[in-house]
Image 1 (cartoon, helix red, strand yellow):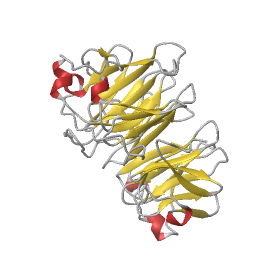
Image 2 (image 1 turned 90 degrees about the vertical axis):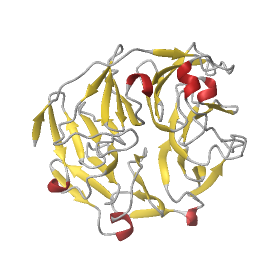
Image 3 (image 1 turned 135 degrees about the horizontal axis):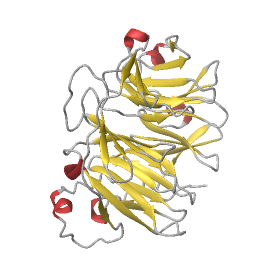
Image 4 (image 1 turned 90 degrees about the horizontal axis):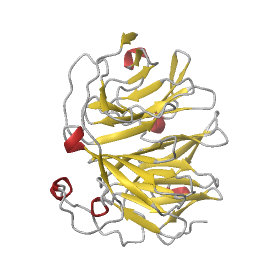
Length: 350
């Protein structure tokens, strides 16, 4: 089904702040945000890790669920949130633009991390607060595409930044949705595929593909196992994978959707994270079971039996040094010799 693109509307302006100032602010926006940061002195990177990203210097960024963003610069872990002029305690997405600056979606809006120079420890934050730009909505996903446009998924809509303004990107829904935290149109995942199509998940309307002009919508009517889609990835063959809230995983090949229903634990699981490793294996989380690795023929489970004490992983990631990470409720873990070890603020990092 193909539908013409909807209308766009112009939003507001840019707010910039330094990340290093920790003095009390006179900024009314900053002071109006309740500081709910919990103590970051415990050994775990965070009680709950949602995202992992590697920057151009090889540093690792960890999006947490209450401590803002944690940055491991190769020597130690530093935390950035409201006191450091980073508007967000809950980090829901991380992406990178063509200049290698990093973008974050948060519960307080959108934040851009700008490198000051060729120093891995020198950067500033530019904030786009939700209360100024987006009607006080939470954000749940972010993508910088090949044209350097920033796509951000809010509680009840999609926004695109063209370098000057945030434009509302209207999905062709058959009803109007509203909400500040979560709605049926909430997008947990936005992806650009190898053909430059933009894929947008929703929390009740399936998946939309946008080719620059038209939309194609995939729902349960088209064979999708569930209309609440948590994550989208593209594999090396160009096939699309969808992890759903209540129906496990789906694979779209050409125009056919295959639901992996041979294993009941996989078929009915909540899948909120998927990843293709450098060998072409597909990894995905499964609520209550840790993670699974699919090699194209069979599934291998990594749970407590393999040292992974995160039953609901939120992120799976392989870095440039071939270190394989999983994060979620319970902290951060790294795969070593087919067994997961817990990595804390003290490491081990290597």
